[in-house]
Length: 321
Ligand code: ATP
Ligand code: MG
Image (cartoon, rainbow, N blue to C red; front, side, top):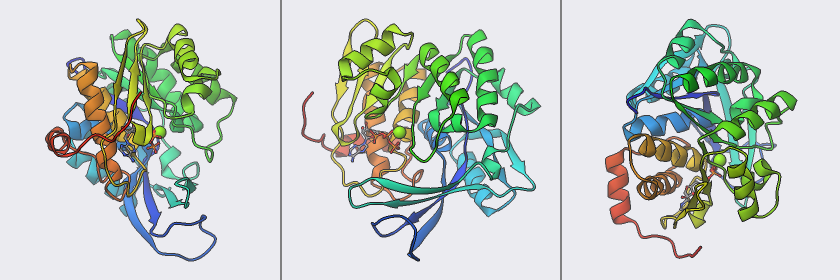
């Protein structure tokens, strides 16, 4: 990570969580929050907490929801110099409620909030020119402003020898148009690391079957694939055909939101700090598992020391590959 910080672009939100399980928000119900959130923000917070150089590009409103986010990112060592504070629009928000089957309903306010009101400023350009790695969250690609920043930052980071990772992070609530699809395809063929979860692998490849999808993507230019398998762990696939599997840690899942983002933040940071695939995968699984034991999407993001303690104390879930 000597080349410069890992940067991430996109939505910075507060999350308000329903404390009961059920279908959506059509009735009055108990809620808890605000928690700092937004997939790109959770990712970058985990990078900072793990001990990597990390910086965020996005925007918040000039309100308490914005301050909750800025304070947390700063506390965790994230450079917030390229986060704009919008004087007119409120900080973005997401309401989330879990259904009995474990799926989630969201009510988002992103497109009409400060979360989407950022762009290519002098601060953003200065940050891109000293960055060593660009991480893209698919969820951010639904915002035209984020697409512009990502498309401009990509060649700059590349030209300095920096690397790129992509988490497809597809959400049914966030419909993505043709332009998002185009940038997604570019990133897919150029990324050094792809971090899909579940069905995102086959969706990204446009092919059925795990092995075939992995083959298609690696042949198509993607440098490495790390597949997140929830409570079944994770697998890393390299173009030379080598594969590393990691069983999940055995935990009680209290709040699954943010697991994939913490996993990604820990994996990217561990690799950038020079750790081999096996060790990075262990840290990533630990970061994801630990995060689901804590309510709030970013609340379980852990330092490297906390992850070492977690790994020492937590058995692996039973399973096989
Ligand atoms: P998100 O819901 O944040 O989008 P994701 O779908 O991208 O998450 P997951 O596969 O759900 O990603 O979780 C990422 C990683 O976190 C998994 O590979 C696993 O290592 C760990 N993890 C997630 N859920 C659990 C769990 N219930 N028990 C143990 N480990 C878990
Ligand atoms: Mg995900």
